[in-house]
Length: 220
Image (cartoon, rainbow, N blue to C red):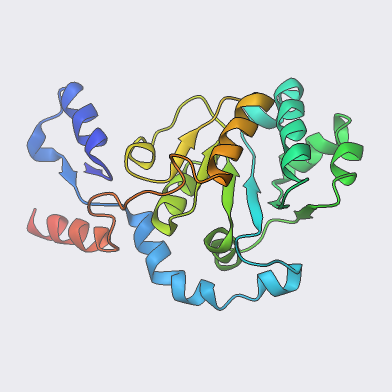
């Protein structure tokens, strides 16, 4: 079993898994990011969208708890309305999220936000460029919590829990309750340079996880 952070080692131990079968190797998603960062830096997506680095927030939302629950989604949109008064919001939108906006009465509210840029889903390199240059990221994704930690970008995760606790204890991530007040509180903390707007790189997230995995398999 290959794990990405110490909490994984601890959890498997608590489940009674033989320690000899558990290997803390790092994170292959970070291998991919680091291998492609230079290519992503060459993306022209900021120019195409008329964006300046560190003057916008990037958004991704797709989890049913956020986009199928219209009370929750409405609270999130209310927070976006306030944040959009201060910076642009760039939102590559998941198909289910777009369908819910159209079908549940939120379309007019979203269209009224002049600082909101709604996009069709973008490719990996373009989105990596968007994340790298954002002032902050608002998401309910798991992987983006990890990617923003490596990139040093403040991340607001609109969820009640995370499978990536190291992104909070060591990285740039913070969990945010799905209320307008908590979203705005955390946004303003980050905007004003509060705790959580910078962080470190977790152990072994160095782009060599796949090498370690291959070596362990080869020696088995």
